[in-house]
Image (cartoon, rainbow, N blue to C red):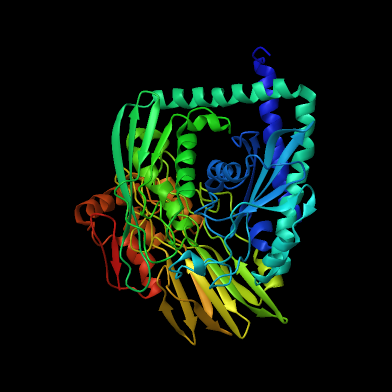
Length: 602
């Protein structure tokens, strides 16, 4: 056929996006486990007959960019053995393009008139895939064999008939078989829904014309991406960010990204990032690639369609054996912290390339505690995804209470947790006097406090941003740190950010999550006093904090001017006053912030 008219191409593009969104709604409405149904830790998409992405659901961005590698693995293994009624399942990061074992792909080929025309793709964080820890996300695993059941691409249905062997193996390798089976059925239901709609779309336009339109849309996505890159300056820029590290005596783990732009092509080189570690935060390459794909789309001035052609101008270098591209048998269960930090690292690079489009660093990604135990004679696993504190933009305060840009994940409803698990949520909200001050301030941190009602509760957790604070811009202040505490009998202990052991709490003990606050932009002493007054009225900060950090005397412009002059002359960058307000309630009296925004506190 000749080239399709732009209107038809737009209609087809939007129809494909609608199908992917419909898949997401099917999973949301039919999933069993709270990590899927309430936190929405899953993703959906469509691929053409070659396995190239042609649509994404409005789901988790750091999942979606991994679909190309996963589909390449599937087609590599089954290119000549794909039939109507087949359904494939896989999760392994080393042979199947996976990210970690709980993230399970279920993919269904779509056949129209005996011809393969596409694939319906789902990815769901399954609540438990076995392994050393409930929830299959143990930071303290040292090799992937400890992390759960590894699945290369296999057929869970063959020509419409279930593979009973697969289902029997799965049932014996999970602590929560009913939830896992229910969530997998939700994935299959989403694929079946997409199959019907996709088939109708192909039949409406005819196979030949439909394939030609997909090719044109891939090329269109490429042209848009190249135009966006060409509008950026040529050159090379680098930025390094750090993860706090593992265990009780953590060693900083570096993530370094170097971006080179030449004409309409862009290279991201992760050389200089730390080697892989003896812990489970090593990050398989598809997850880091997802961060790059996300950043390119976020800085674009116009919307780039979700067609894989947009990847053609991108070159991503990921050194083997590094924290961003580990080699087997490195453990990867808690790999997500590297993916979230990769976003911050790329933001640090693009803040130099296109400064007007990039804000300061936020909370650093999702904190992931997994609680497990026994309740009413049954095993349970509660996995939480805690985030919601953005850094400031150049002309706006950081936004509070919405997902990190890397994923449309939500914090689970308090009432749902208390109804399903032997846990009471004692507090959930905004932390006063938190976040990084600035002309535009970072969002406050989040507190969430859990009291254990069961006889014994095991917690496996992954967190960050206690020592290496969210970075600021233009003279703003770094964000406030993340802390995790256990309170028992009137005393408290501070936990490492990534404990290399399971935590065991008894009835009545309390686990406290204190999320990092976003960083600020611009000098805090230049903040509009009216904005400071609003923050006091909204109880984001105290009046005392307003005076001693922002130099604002409420209702007195003359005293404000004098006080700001005094503070400007006397402030100590190594002992910033705003951190004292945050740390003192935690019992921390001695602290120091070095030039690299690294916090030491006792």
